[in-house]
Length: 84
Image 1 (cartoon, rainbow, N blue to C red):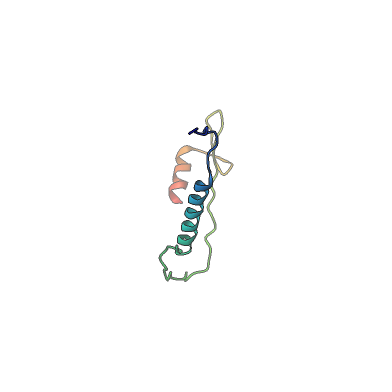
Image 2 (image 1 turned 60 degrees about the vertical axis):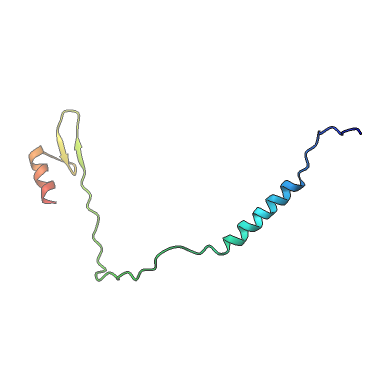
């Protein structure tokens, strides 16, 4: 009895396994629900918005300090920032 040479791979069983896995994934994906906790959050009492506070501090190459474009000393800038 003569044996045939193995030069091809049969992919039909592989396709069957892939299709079975696809059916399992699709079947279980329908059971997955949105996970989360539903909360009743309180509503805001005030509708006034606080404007964002923007301060610009700069130092030039000579070492002069500027607060919103105005030249000031370091101690005065520190006092203004503490006041904020």
